[in-house]
Length: 250
Image (cartoon, rainbow, N blue to C red; front, side):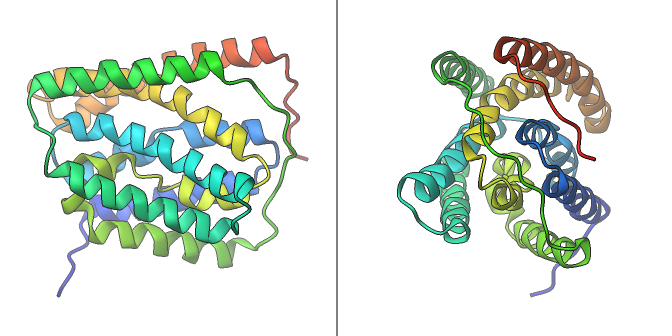
């Protein structure tokens, strides 16, 4: 079977590989979490998939939440090795995404219901989960070894993107590799997902409202403005509340 790699597929492969590599070489868990938050994969993957924003994109955020906590529970609570834990959680995401992609309607009712439910889950988790101090970690693998591994993971996702529909756009492309490097700070990574949700749901709403009035690329650019504003407010509040000094890497 021949596989056609379009411009947006190739760009997705490159930008996600770079983002995941940057995350791996940062030391402090908070900087890792911040890089993880940036919706670069969502932006490029949306263009690569070429489908309008619908309930599958929003529900993918809940699967992302399940993925990160699944890895954390398997590795930290059940003491499973981190690589099989990540692989099992990633396969679970793909299986659930593939099943739900064929069931979720594309209409407004499903989209707005998914938005409300997802935001409620995120707000509840932010209010009920406490910050924990966790050790930092920087990858010891050279970049010329890490980049091919990352690109292999993303390349596999491109083969199944059409079956996953909107779930492809929020698949943990960076996280699936990043959690290995952040295996000493999985609570911090998991706690960052509600922040990602609260930034990305408004982003998806903007795209949904604008996608019939302008090209998809323009709608995504407009949504980034709202995302960055929401992200800034959320991080200022969380970092101030936790009174954490973030050390830069030398």
